[in-house]
Image 1 (cartoon, one colour):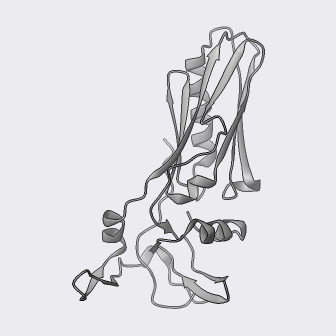
Image 2 (cartoon, rainbow, N blue to C red; image 1 turned 135 degrees about the horizontal axis):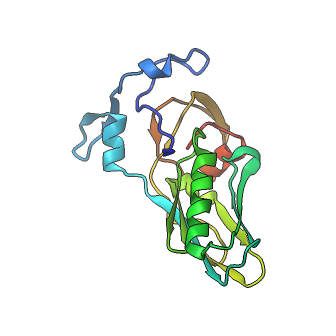
Length: 210
């Protein structure tokens, strides 16, 4: 079964031009100011426990009458995907129902994203496919669907846009980012809580975040 991409939590104490071997990174502690004015150490793992990542979500519900040869296609559009979008299609047989079509499409999506640096899961329940994208990056994803003949496909929300994602981003390769005349280094395995405008710019520029 394909699994959601995960990066070891930690960060190297060097610059992006001289990255350490990611598999050897320890879970380095990081300094944070506490409420009483003292400086505490908080590991990336602890930071995520205190500031959890919440999924952005949207769904497609299939309905109507299924006929052999009907083609159902669902597309997820997002800059983090190869070529900016991923489409999976299924052609119905004489024994298919909306439930089996949803299950087949979910399997195809999970196989397609296996190994990609995206935190996306697709869950089929009955004729409904729910797309859950972990963290704030998922808020940039949009679903669309096409069906044939007497079948129907209902998006929720009707725009197909995933929403509700929150929490920090994670970095899967060191990089330097220039924004508003400020240059910042971002380290592998380290969580960052950023505004949606900065996250959007990072995605547009293809930065290694998820």
